[in-house]
Length: 225
Image: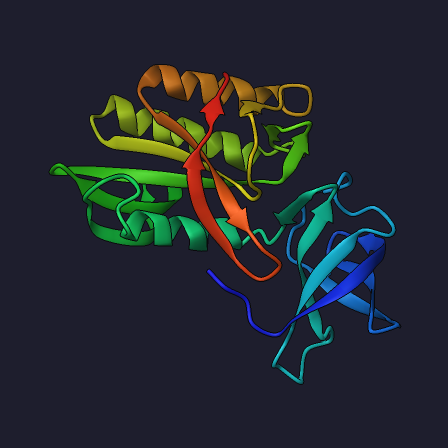
């Protein structure tokens, strides 16, 4: 996936979840933050960032904050990017041959990011974007997510009913060591993930090649439950 109309900037402040103050071309701009997570370890004053200029003149903010540099890493923090990258990866054979790939499919009382058929078996897949990293170790989530735990319980039930069930953690950066559930922040999610794996849900994590204006799923990462 690729972004057009990208410009560099310097992060200054984040007044709330939805906006940030970024210096662009010597002028402080109010930009939209496309990630409502905490991202405190990413958005620190002085951080180098890259923003996408909107083509919509009616918007209140002219830019979306997309990419940030943390040390030697470029990290994509657009919360919509993991699903777009996952769709490209699935369509290009990331899980092997699949058919009938669809986005946002309902089953029971849950809506899952993707459904498809693999080896004649209906399958459901949920995507989780990961931006929290420390010394090459990634964790999810960075804030409590009851919705995330609900999705995992739904996947576990699907697996028990004989469907294919997957959770895909898209790590929005390259070259990480492994991923683990962030039990310190959300123990309920961590337990739901372990329960899902025990029920037969396939737990996958993939890192990404990231540039200032692109992100592409690259290679598999170990998951330590």
